[in-house]
Image (tube, rainbow, N blue to C red; front, side):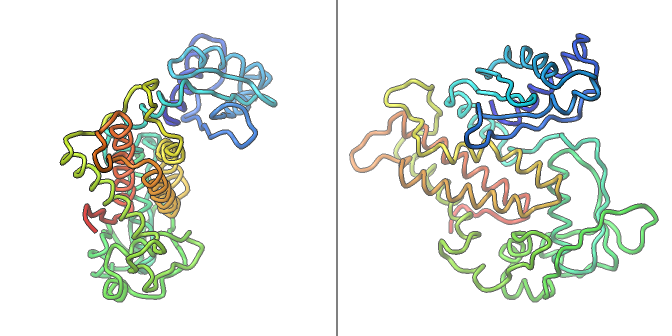
Length: 360
């Protein structure tokens, strides 16, 4: 069970409790679950009982008990505990089963892994200055929102710079609008689109404009073109390219990726894969948070973390057999994990409007 699936499971439990008249409160549009903090209980925690206690005119602990009995019966949930004033803590079934669910979701959804409809009721109109960072940021925020089901458009104060097209930016209209607008005003780049394109090219320019939070100055120096580990953009794209190379290498060796059932000996779910699997499981939540908070920089940092975890996993648990070694269940599962990481990286880069080459 992925975090997104757990969130939907809890929301379903709330709806059931309301339908059965065990709980008299409005059903929230969404339920947020978070990884349990160090020292906490279970794998994930949720504060929905505290949120519903007031409207339901019940103590939070009573709301939590009502929801616990409904969530605990759901497949994939191993244990549900009530902690503190009414927090629900969830322990999922065997981690490998949750891992298999994540890998299956990535394989099925492809580059759209992490997209959803949580914001389907929202309509936005983003308005920005005739400035390249504002334009690129507004476009990226719009992409993130559309990926979560929202609708809307982007407008500019003045006629757009023709060079914006080469950065993947389009504007639906420009000028003064009579309707309320959401302003996108990051710290200006200090350069025009044409200057950035000449110095950096479209991909490095977009990464530099989006990687920093909007209230921080964007780093737009030659370091964005360095072909080395010190350059986060290169590391992210290289991790993607390496994942695709592993697939090609496995094909030459006559095997393909397959997430093996938990319990095989030796277990293919290496401990070194845990940080990478956790990051991929969290990816849908990061995309949703990036959309809600108008923060494409969160997505960029997520991709950096995935790339870092990918290389740690790759170096500790090679997906391809070495020498005369025969492909095993462990290799097939490691390859499935590596391929999923490559897909997550490509999908995240796509939302930022950046290409993910298969060869670097």
